[in-house]
Amino acid sequence: MCGIIAIAAKNDCINDIISGLYSLEYRGYDSSGLATIKNNHFEYNKNVGKIFNLEKSVKKNKLTGNVAIAHTRWATHGKPSIKNCHPFIKDNCVLVHNGIIENYTDLLSQYSINKKNIKSDTDSEIIAEIYNKLLNKFNNPVEAIKNLNKKIIGSFSFAFLVHGSNSIFVTKRGSPLVLGIGKHFNAVSSDVLGLPDSTREIIFLEENDIAELNESSISIFDKNTRKIKREKHKFVQKQDFKIKGNYKHFMEKEIFHQPISIEDTILNFADKKRKIVYLPKSNIKFNKFSNIILVACGTAYHSCMVAKYWLEAMTNINVSIDIASEFRYRKNKFSLNSVGIVVSQSGETMDTLKCLDKFKKNNIPTVSIVNVLNSSIARLSDFILPTLAGSEIGVASTKAFTSQLSVLALFALHIQQQEKSINKLYFNSIFEIHKSVNEILNKENEFKKIAQTLVDTKSIFYIGRGVMYPMALEGALKLKEITYKHCEGFAAGELKHGPLALIEKNIPVIVLAPYDENYFKLISNIQEVKARGGRIIMITDKMGAKIAKKYSDKLIIVPKTNFLTSPIIYSLPIQLIAYYLAVFLGTDVDQPRNLAKSVTVE
Image 1 (spheres, one colour):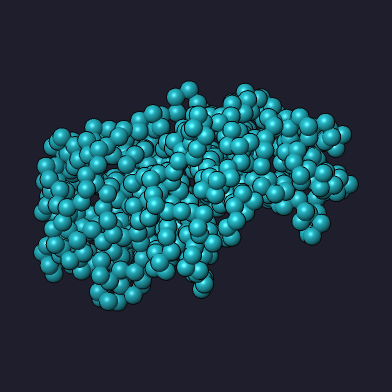
Image 2 (cartoon, helix red, strand yellow; image 1 turned 90 degrees about the vertical axis):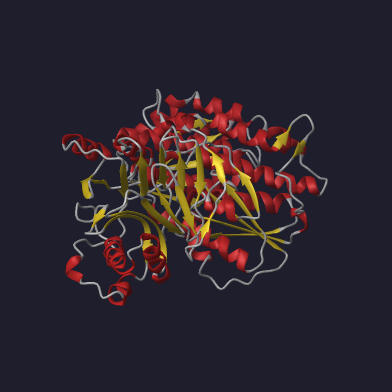
């Protein structure tokens, strides 16, 4: 959600600023803007819509500058418009802001702000006006930030330009910021992807850090403005992930990358020859815990739902799962013999991060499953299980989801291994998953045909049993996210408890049906749908197809699976159906309306 890029350079940096904004598009946005300081004067451009509009405006106005800040906005307070677009320009400063200020109305009175000076509907402009006032009081940008931060309730990352200075001033709490160090520049961004390609080293700011950067130096201060040092890391370019190549959309590229991302993740944790699962080095004996608590949001939550089935069946540990936005506010009763596992693609998901804090305050050991090793969640966790999906640009998660499932499957096998009872069938089968995924991807035309039949439907349903129930929820979520069609996922056994009322003639019901112990119960549920005129689209294997043929209007055959591999392999059909339907409907596949990739606010 929202993106910040700021650069202080020896030469003109506007092209790098625009490039950085494009790299942050995946986070979701509805408007963008940039500002620079030249000859002690602020110049700026703002535009609603795509960054391309801003780029055209900047070129038309011949805007240049060596010190600049820019922003992509995802609306929270106030609709998308020029007046609500960042940056906010005041007499003494310019501001861009990610996050939400919860007490912004109280701040107006605390600082005696004249409401006539607030032209937008945002919480962000109020901060700009307060900082403008504090600069007059302290005549020191860092001290002014220190005072400001003490009064704010909420999450934020700020970047300021200050009248009379060629530096950029930044600070953060609960919203990520990374500094980039180059030969002739220093930069700051919400994400490593936003930094210039010529960046050499990076520094991740910690909570309440304040930093000042110019073209040749960076100074970092703690919340009391004492000068401190933060660890430098080598910058690794991620250019390959930022280019679509021959694919029409990033989502398509990421779907077709999964044979590689799944295999990379599995081989990172498992050795086929030695027949072992090896997690990163740790003294933790996971099999000694009596409780595992899994917490996540959205698609990551569905991976946790699947993991609950696996862990309950494969270990003797009690497993609970929760939606992060609910868990963080519940009056939980924690057992001391528990471990908390948080799952997040970005490692910056605000609700999930707060759950991690909650675990730590209750002395619960923490494990994070993340795709970004230097993210806030990863840095604050006791133990990290990385997914090796590579940067994911499309808002609708695909390769990150199957990598999460892969890690969770390996985690379940690891606990079995600690008990000296690893399931050999499951273990051997994980090394074949990428082949099955390739086989499904080679049937892309079948999924295009299915998607074509769904174009004119008003509603679509997914059903499944066992581990296919959370996959039905995930299938429905994918369709909702990028096609804007009404779609619901149900546990098939629940149909008769209410959802059957929604079934009418020709309503498509997509059935996820591997031939397993739940299969024949699912056949009964299919007949309930057929009796009410529903149209059955069956996704199953060869054994399942023999029986289901007479009940199905359309049949898709996928490779044979087992209890552990089926959720990973059945992820591909639901992704492909959603993707091709979105393409046929002409929606913005990579940046669907109203959504953001990295959800850094509540």
